[in-house]
Amino acid sequence: MFKRLVAAFKRLISYVIRYLKRHSRELSFILFLFFLQFVVFLPVFFWNKPWTIFFKEFPSKANYTMEESNLNSKRLSKAVEYFHSTDAKASLKWYDDVIKNNIDDLDMVVSIVTTKRKNSKITKNSLGYLLQSSAKVDKLVKHQTHFKSIFTTICNVDAKPEEHHDAILLKNYLPYVERYGNSKPSIPDLFLPQSNVTYRTNTPVRTFEKETIDYMFCLNAAKYWNPKYVLLLEDDGIVHDNIMDILAYVLKYRVGNFSRYGAKDFVHLKLFYPEKWQGYAYEKDRILELLSGGLVGGAIFILIYLSYNIKRRKHSLALIFTCGVLFTVLTCVVIGRQNIIELRRIHPCTYRFVPSPGCCTPAMLYPSNIIDELSKSLSRDASKPYLRTDLAINQFVQSSGLPAFYIEPNLVDHIGKVTTLGLADKPANQFIQQIDI
Image 1 (cartoon, rainbow, N blue to C red):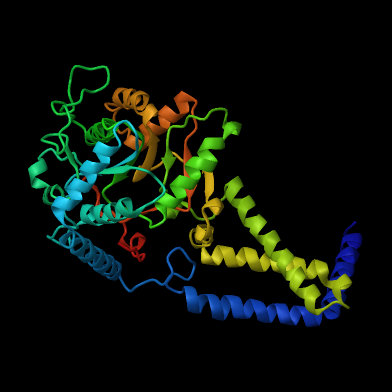
Image 2 (image 1 turned 180 degrees about the vertical axis):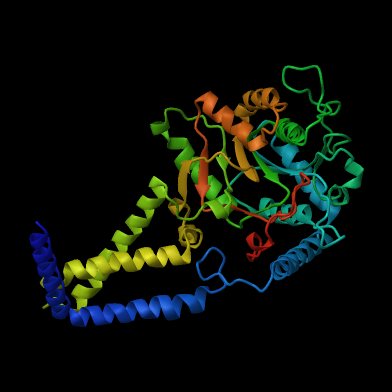
């Protein structure tokens, strides 16, 4: 038996050697191509690109922090400049006209949930997240053409709203709602679901409980204006320039026609999912996605080979295809899925429309008719220890039997290195991407 195995192994080695000699020309070129790609081209162009294998390590975390701080300061300067150049009275009148001209026919309310932060250890100045997100939203809402009417409001849920200075400043430019104070334009003090307690008089004990009740308040305050949809945006989320283009397309061609999910009602559209969890992983859909890309790459290699090597095509197709698959798969892994999916931004129809993951709430679009049932569910779950808002929403999705969706790649960038929950700052290297205001 052992002799047979040795003989078989020798025959295999002999066959491989003959095969390599026969295709030495192709192999030499392929090896040269691999060398150019992985030793020259990719390291040069992607050495400092986030989420790639070549992402450069700075000498210390302080440099990441400094870069993130500089980028945040530049965005904040642009946001401040935007509001300084905006006529405050004209801005408020613009939103007043939106309400007056679209009573009971409002397409969307964009509500920006905000509370003051305990500033980062490295600065005593305002981080200005709210100013940045509000400037971008205000600019896009006033110039978008896909929806007939969109209303924007700042939802200040700070227990001491007068101390949230950025929100107070924006009160001069944008409609403004306070959970623990006055609103402009005014809305009544709303009641918690199935309760005689109002949001203003409710006093949550736990941090996560307050987070959930705050979220419910902003949802219901936005619903007060009777829109078709509510886009709830946390104050450290900056929307992309094309967010309205994509939402209009998805609501018309995807959400309006997903009979395969069994219903046309849905809980939400998630517009952000953390990039650190978007990479390739040992998950069925991610593995299939990577292999599919490899097969496309292999096919492209064959087409190129046939274009220049017609006479030798019968003997080398398997080799060329295999090398093409390997070349493409390795390239995708090196560059990172987070960067590969950016190619989907070429057109609204190329965005992925998939079941929503459970995590995270920086940007969520809700149909107005789901808010009452969702609020009841959140109200029941709010007091459960350590149950965060995103997990409570996910529990409602699972119990309701209604679908929830995620649009990939993200339509919102997350800039919140410093959280509102008093937790430790997040790693600065997750916030060094270039973001336009």
